[in-house]
Length: 416
Image (tube, rainbow, N blue to C red; front, side):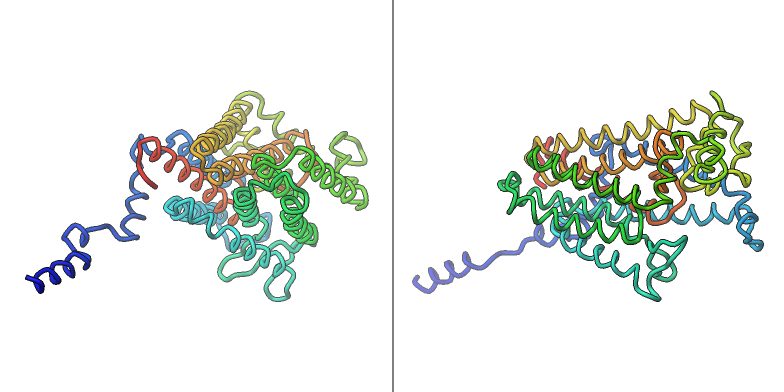
């Protein structure tokens, strides 16, 4: 009886394996289940289709604006679909990257927030390394990673967003303190800002700064520290414009773009952009019928894609694009507020940070095309030609869709 009792004790102490345990889904099965669990109650269809609409419209407009570009750029061996094919590959790469980003739980993004930030900061340094960095137009903004070229400033927009959101979550109790709450993150932002200024890329610096400061403010930074840091960055930005002659001329020329001293020089892009938009009127001249892209408007497939949209699709087309961006930004903030209501601060800050990122960048690009802001090279998210920018826009939107996916699971009582 004693032996039998000991045997029973040993049997109870040892874990039993059942068929149910053998059938428990592995990590990759859970990953695939999350990826395929896209039924109507589980995701924001409006947000998803707004992003898809911008990607497809951008694909069509890049083709329309780039038909004559191979000949203009001396790529005589290339046909009229040269830029279209490459942009299509980038869009496919962006969609694939977005799928993988969606399948990663948000807690996974939080774990790697700091390593991602440090890795991208190193990449910002490597753009100046001979043989690795690529210089174009007097700027060091690209890394040569055969067979592709990477723009680290685009990666930094997501990296600093994740880092600042994680920092605000971990230091929530000290966000109002200057020494232990403000100084560490301010030094990190200052380091990134310095590297971007050295490239130089003033447009990217504005977006990165707005995202970082916005997420810090939403994460609990005191108004005094927020406005103090904003004033400091504003002063640095002002000095960087006033102390550099060509930036100063470009900055002030937009106030009177058709003046004789500016029209054929510093405001040449802006004057042609305004004329293209004016020519489009309400309904546009027709898809592919625009003439500004034919040697009049420089780089119509990148920074001034919106001007071509205005010429070929008119005010109606431009308003449709503005509405799609409005919808994306609005949903990002609503999804973020919902996550915060579930006490998921990191999730909420990331979603709202993506809304800030896409909203600020789209606002600057549209403002430049419409003559409301000084001319600055900054692409239109999801639409303009540019490999790294397209991929990162898709990844950012997919992360927000993942946050919404997890919010909906919590509302159904599912444990994440």
